[in-house]
Image (cartoon, rainbow, N blue to C red; front, top):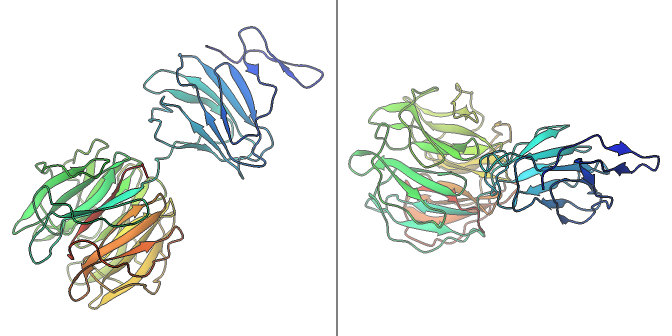
Length: 420
């Protein structure tokens, strides 16, 4: 059914009457936690008692129209989520999360075509953009156990690390890993007697693919973070000399050519996403000393200038997202091994040191899992280890979990999969 908003008439009883070829307002106020709506209708959504998920039609034609209104001005307390039911929303797939969280809002949706899908013709308070669904699983990969290795270990949505999976791709240490494309991951770069620029894609089932010939300068000890909702960026590292170059990864997992660096060249840096669509690189080994500086990454992948660091300068630490929109740096080496951590706010501000929990170590890796949590794992505490430490949704690092899998250091990790 196609419909447009016509000249609807407000009667003396307060009822909006349907006009010819106009929008039909459903008289029953929606108070349930779920409702399926139809084109050509307007709906009053009352979330006083609970949030509401609104399922849009499974099929639509260009010009189809649906309006939803915050009946009791409570969407700011109990929000509304739109399920586009297999169709795109503002050009994004149905896997993206669409929420309206502002009290008093109304949303006028028009269906365009199969590419852009449903578009908000009007959302009269704010124009909320879809946000990517949260990462549920993680993978540790590669590293050094006395020799270069390509072994991987999957992490389920409860933070449980699985046994070794035989490596695919060139064994190496000093690689970096990051999620891309909403539900996949990529490992890239590293060292195995020579500097490497190859990469290995990870599908949304955690299967590592064969080597892809690299783009960009071969190097080790770089790091990577997500940005823009579905893309990633590798930055910094050592080619034999410290560099600040970066390489963007598009949402199909293709690594782009070098971008001339911004910020101090350094290696053994860490990076994490924050704020839903931005990232941050922090700490590392500079030319003459370990540093605590950071560099923000915009939602278009542009790295900003150095920000004077907060927290203890160190190298060989790791970082991951937690809490949906925040990040955490932890562990590393200052000259001595440490277990301290530093939280990152959803605006990219690094907080002061928090005394560590778990074994102090360097050359560790970290990734997000379980929607809003993180895991740090492996590393070197004087000897190589496979212990892990979970981080809860409030950013609190938990006690050691006994190792599963081959103890190794100089490892990489990434989040993948939106399926628990």
